[in-house]
Image (cartoon, rainbow, N blue to C red; front, side, top):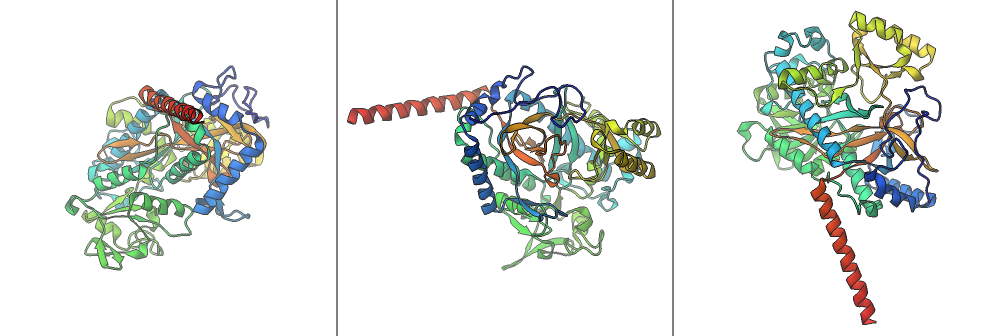
Length: 519
């Protein structure tokens, strides 16, 4: 039997200073397994460490065989790794997910309204004094070339990845928004495929909502934002930087999932403001480009002239309305971690609603008063560069040395606009296999939201786990792993699962009785 070690309120094993108490997703305050985790724990408790190790090896071999990898740049051990997935799933019950779903749909709707207001509207949110103009124009992701480039349905963010955390009070909060090229959905789907093969019995008593429809949903959304003139059957492509990109596996996966061509910049051309794809049959017009290339490299005519990854003239075609680029150019202004602080205000301004999911408490360091307070508490806060992603550049005050804090102070004073500070979130935890036992590790959650004619939140998302004991960094590029995320269906779906199980047991009993009678 495998021991599942539960966390205690004494904090992490390495003595990391933290507030007393935290949320353990797996057990309650009395150390009892939560009801919706009971079937999974019982299943794992029947396994030996040797059996779990065998399952892990089978998972790794399957991922290697399918090429399910990601790339870590600057790693001495080699850049390409098999995707890390822990076998113990995260489970979210139906009622809890309903609140998350509503909050995410609300947030992404407001962000789309904001982006469309900034680039294609009257910039009303600036003129009405909700957000300072200098904050917008100083964003690394603000692109003047995107001004007055309209997008069908105002869906500037077609695919959003919103990072959620749950702190000591048990409340979900948004840690950051990813509105440019959010990655990870392919791993959500592949994690599920692996779990259904490796642990089929673990699903037996739970009505787990499917994620397999993502490709169909994405295709529907991309069709909905095609230029009106292209008719009912638009040509859609996925644009990738190429095989050396860290997320190339996902690019190829998405193209297969929605049944469209995966292309590189050299496969496309623009003639008379119309994008065409080179094929063996000649040129074929392209109506929608789901791009996985950053703005800087997208069109060498208006951005980086040295880029060989993009398509010369693409922005002129987008401006002419003959092609839709998703996600829209310039979405990086919404990714900026200083702009993130204003998203609750966007929800109130555009939707006249209170945020259903709030932000983590955030301090803007270009503000003199907030900066002064933060500098007094550097050792208690998380300091983040506003334009970085992947966990790079983050300084966690309670874990940082005096030298690191002094260096961080100097960087803040040198350019306060480049930094924000946040209160440390004592991330919730789940058991993860460390090679010997299941021990508690910190987790977050990146659900994915699709926006077109309708807004759809994919059930679950990518649960990321800090595999190193005591770590709060969950990014795979920083040594983190992942978990399959199970969103449970409602009572009706649960009854259907139980009915099927009962019928299966009845059929098996009848077959066994018939066999005995035959003997």
